[in-house]
Amino acid sequence: MRLLAATLFATLALASAAPAATFAPVASPAVGMEDENVIFSPQAAQVAAQWRAFGVDYVRIQAYWNAISPAPRSTRMPTGFVPSDPNSPGYNWAPLDAAIAAVHDNGMRVMLTINQSGPRWASTQPSVSTPSWKPSPTRFAQFASAVARRYGTRVDRYLVGSEPNQRAFLAPQYVCVGRTCTPSAPQQYRNLLNAAYPAIKRADSRAQILIGELAPIGSPPSRTGGVYPMLFIRELACVTSSYRPLRAARCRGFRAVRGDGFGYHPYVNSKTAPTVPQKNPQLAKIGDLPRLLGVLDRLTRARRMYSNTGRFNLYLTEFGYLTNPPNRRYGVSLGLQARYLAQSAYIVWKLRSRVKLITQYEWNDDRTFPTGLRFITGRPKPSYFQFPNPFWVDTSRGLSRALFWGQVRPDAQRRVTFQVRPRGASTFRPAGSATTDSGGYFARTMRALGGAAYRYQYVTAAGTITSQTFTTPRS
Image (tube, rainbow, N blue to C red):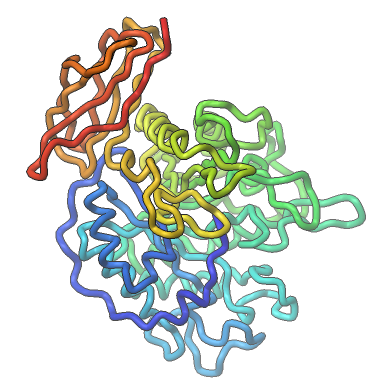
């Protein structure tokens, strides 16, 4: 969500990638993590080991086009540089090599975002100094090819672009004549996708390619705003609000995009619970995923977008809740962050036939976007202790048919025992048990007591692990 400083990436002098460790089985839905301030730091290997111990299956890393490429501020590409050749002198892969090695050495998989913010010489209008201004599809495809050729089997999932509906990552979002503004970013992104997809597949035919990676926010048309995600998707497919083909100059020569999945960042960014729906139909957040899937399905049926799996599955490649402290304006309390993250994981599990991944963003807070499991100082929040053992009791069908759900991370088949502390009682007592599946998930329907506190426990070699406590509503 935030714009990371490319200088952090560009100045790290780290070792090249080491042979990958054996991968652990992946849960379904899978669990992801992203924190670039950590993975591009000298502490990467140490923290990556903790991520795996916390049950992370995938780590999202970004290949920053402008940081990896030579002369990023120049209006002219360096003489003799070959952007499609990963071995061309000028490319600086060392920090990315080391980050990928840290993930692999700890048995996790990499999902690599090929960031569309390129060097100035790769813009179709290099005279404009605005970052991310009209990147050349040809140059972007060359960079994407170089990335896929370099990493091959070390990366099995590529994410084409990051939040292209935000001006910080792709500009301009709108082209305005007087007071009339028409979307520009969706057309640009469509051209980038149509150039990059075949380039990646030629370099690595087995690679999974995700498109989208949209932010869940936008604004009314303006010179400085971002495009609403639902509008962006319709414009990407060149259809009107009634899903009829859009007859406009920006759709002349339209060619439908293709992908192996759709990436999305369903942040709530407010103090509302995950299940609260968005009133604006142009938005889709964690509680609106069926709306997003419905739009994608409608467009694939109309052949305005193509999914190689028949219909697009969703991959939530960023997600988190701002906390207060430190964000007093938009953050939720520390306790609510832990609760809402567990509830969000449950929402994704319920949609597991279509939603294949949820990614925690970030591990540590940064100064502008404090969604971490730890403060910027490294001090843990309650969510840090909850993350390996999410727990939710769904009483929407009544207390007599409550669904006790959770996950044991890292994923493994284990027996968990439920405990209850009835309202007014001071101690917990046994309340049943369940066995997790191969991904560490369990779900059991049981009668629940109103206003009671529940938790689950399981035993490891290190001792007994206890989940967070969930209190049911009073009957």
